[in-house]
Length: 186
Image (cartoon, rainbow, N blue to C red; front, side, top):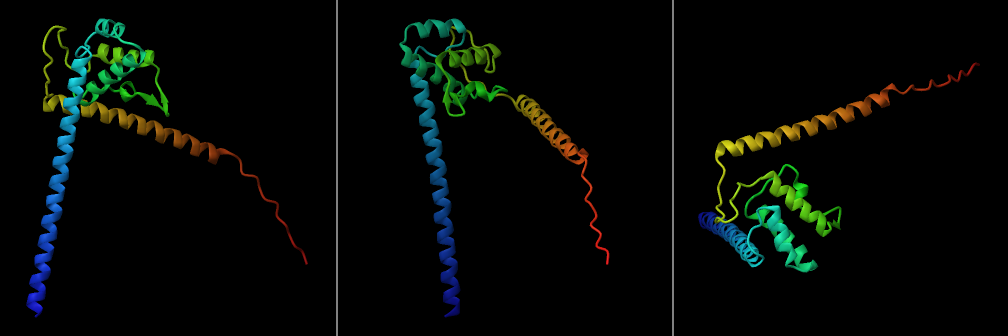
């Protein structure tokens, strides 16, 4: 009886483990598929608005053809494509955002962000009349980028610590008033 119980318990553990593993694999596959579909959809949308804009002249030329709402959507699409497909990684993440503190950026500001991203050439430069090729950066390049990012984060942490230390020193430097001694004499 006890052996059967242990065997049954072991069988249940294995079967639930396999079920959980299968669910994890299915979830991972589903996420990969949805990400792939999003990238394909972004690519199709980019083709609809005249392809990837690689110069500020391209931006101006294509924006002239569109109305205000289409301009806004096209600029957002260009920024989103650079972020998700080209993995554009500027030092200032603010450049790839559409809003800040819940306030949408106006069109002229989004256009200027796009021009800054283009001018800084975060992605590999592409001649205007050539096919866009996706290049995976080498391990050394990724390591260099990560090292720069770590240095930036460390500097920010040092500044925060310094500010806290200065604030703490201000608190301790303030004179503490002496308490009057109440002497109860009998």
